[in-house]
Image (cartoon, rainbow, N blue to C red; front, side):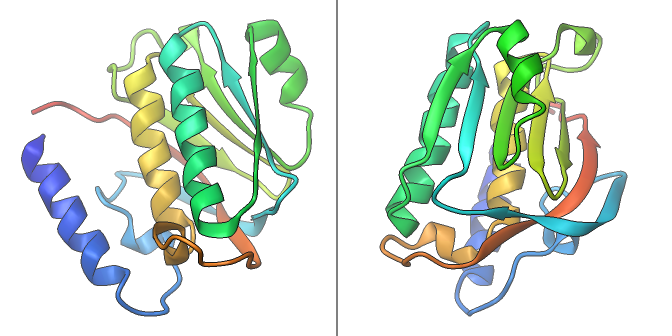
Length: 171
């Protein structure tokens, strides 16, 4: 696991040195399968994060994402903690990022996740908070590299539309 983190940090350091745009082809680790879709999810100051409160860490991780975006852009994204019933309603929201715990994924590894980015919303689901964590790392790679720079200013940011499932292992 530490080797993967070390390589990820080195990769991000090298790729963030220029004015490059993130692409699906530069993800670490490379996904076994990924479906590129037409369009992109445009993020802006009004984007809202909905976090499943069935596991406390999910709300914390949502706050960390919002803080990272605020540091770079000044945008203060609203983070809403909600139960599974509220998450079902939130899935119809536009301009929303949903971080969901899905008990149906109980057979997947603790670190596995499903990430679906469309033009209207982002849905990241996992059976455990570790999967949400890894899915957020993938999302960070899909943001423009300026997300890693404090005070980058407000820009036209978007995430490419994709459908991805990932099974991480600790080995």
